[in-house]
Image (cartoon, rainbow over all chains, first blue to last red; front, side):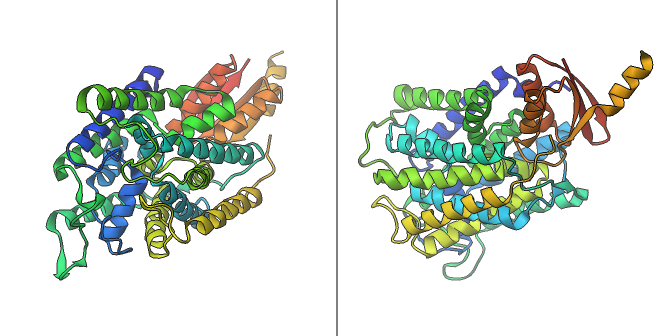
Length: 360
Length: 79
């Protein structure tokens, strides 16, 4: 079967579409420059589940649920649903934990870095440079034989668990389960966690993007990695399309463009840590084989290892906020810098020890 | 001649990239091409890896033939 969306035109169209939907979600209620941010939204989910008690960032984000389920449905329809598991699971979990640690020091995943850029937040440039540096380090490991090993086909039911978890989250969102005041599910009354588009619009946008991203293989980490590894601009053309369309819509139509470093929404100006936070995130994504968005899509297709990476990110968000490692608009958290250093050391050790002699 | 070709086919280098994360199937393919292999096959287990390997082969101006083997794909690469 010829896959139209995996063509050059296809990936550009999908990138542009994600840009448009993300910016529209901001217009419809999501936080500024955060139409879709996989790291931030998983962090909000962690908060809603009580894994951290940062009261301003607690919400079950339907976009995340939609991304997984959209990919799940389209994979079933297109015959690409392949339950698989067994590739260095615990390492992938901690790569997820540290990917989230880095992303929350910068305050965003690569998708949000692109949206911040298209909204005029120049701190995103520092973050993206860091992301590129981290990915470049990952490429060096890949070239020298780094591998987390094979995954193996799993029973059909093995791939249902993660989508089922997403449906459970959606039920918690719709029914707002409470046992006593303020629990066990938490929803922000103010701050970014309280800002959101209509549930069904968010879910619909997530489903659409999830389906399209599954078909097109859209991946922000892969985009930068392929430029460095093979001078291949295929995935990058989708990323560029996202930034350009989001910028055009922000600037000319919705008036959401505000250029500068200072006073940007849900962002800080500590350049060194914006940079190093994303070095850590980029390296962790490269070692795990995908950006956070891509990991959600893979989890939807039945990849249990990607599902474990996502769980690592959600738990990592809890740890980041509980241990004062996550940044806020005021700057980095008390232990953010130390966590970034520990995370980079962890990733470097994994990169070195998980090398195989290449069979070629 | 026919026999020669047969033996070449059976000696054909086979890369098993099944179950490997992105971009390892492509890295293995590129290494084989850089190492001067002009006839080899790559086994992958996902449509994504298949597309990526095909793009890599095309970029190196080589030919590829794909056949399905159960849930897997076998890509035969030749000059």
